[in-house]
Length: 232
Image 1 (cartoon, rainbow, N blue to C red):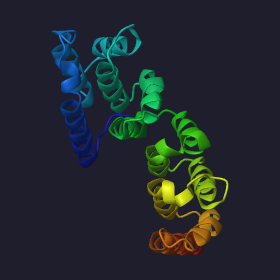
Image 2: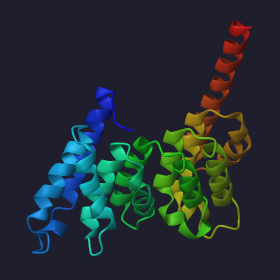
Image 3: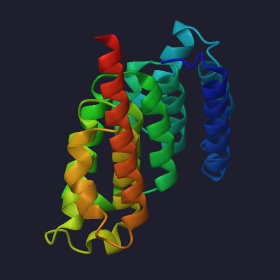
C-alpha cells in the first residue's frame, strides 16, 4: 500500500534509487532505447504516489509483455508493489526467490508494502522450502516485518530444521538465515518460539542473539499480562 509515513516513504525512495543504480548496466544495451526513460519516469511517479490508472496500466505491460528485460520487470514490479497494486504480486514473489540477494531485498521491500493477503503464505513457503534454504534470508525477514499468522510457525520450522541433523550444513552453512530466524522470533515476541530459541542458545554462533530474543519474548509476555490486568 502507498506509504503515508514520511520516514517509510523516504526509505522507499532510497530503495528505488538504489534499484535504478543497480540495474544501470543492464539498461546499457541498445534494446533499452527510449523506453528506459519512460518506464523509469512512470515508476518514479508510482513510488511517489503521483501516478494514475493509465500510468499503472503501462507499468503492468512491462510485467506481462513478452521479451521484457529483467530490469524492466523488476522496476515496474517494485513501483507497483509500493503503490499497492496487486498485479505486481506474482513478479515480486519470483524476485523474492531470485539468486541475486539484492533483487530479493528489493522485492521484499515492495511486498511488505503491497498489502496482499497472499504475501505471507508465499513468503512462508519460500522460507520453509528445504531446497531453497540458501535463498531464505529475505523471505524470513519479510515474514518478520509482516507479523502475519504464518510468521512464527514458518520461522520456527526453518530454525528447527537448521538446528537439526536433517539439514546438510545446518547453521554452519546457513548462519545468516538462522540468525534472521532468531532475531525475527524475538521481534515477534510470541511465547511459542521459546523452545526453539532455547535450543538455539545452545549453539555458540546463535547464543547471544537467542538469549536476547528470549528476553524480548519474556518482556512481551509480561507487557501482555500487564495490559490484560489493566484492561480487566
